[in-house]
Picture 1 (cartoon, rainbow, N blue to C red):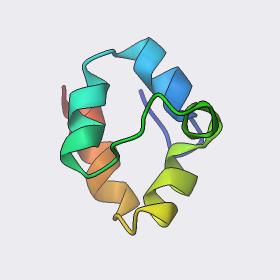
Picture 2 (cartoon, one colour):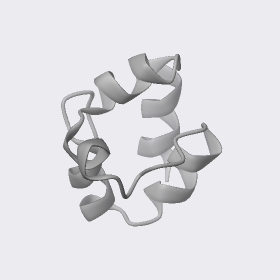
Picture 3 (cartoon, one colour):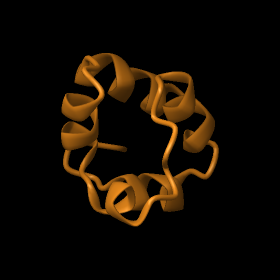
Picture 4 (cartoon, rainbow, N blue to C red):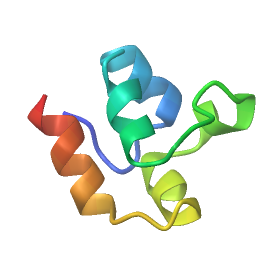
Length: 61
């Protein structure tokens, strides 16, 4: 299960298909070195996204 504390890098390792989901939410630079070290919570804050919506989508696949 993906949580707010997982880094983007961990999420992509757990589920490579998560990249498509995150890009659909507007997170376009998933390969950036700094992006892979951000937690999902940090990335949602930076991109002004609702964390719960992103988590629901990531965990529903």
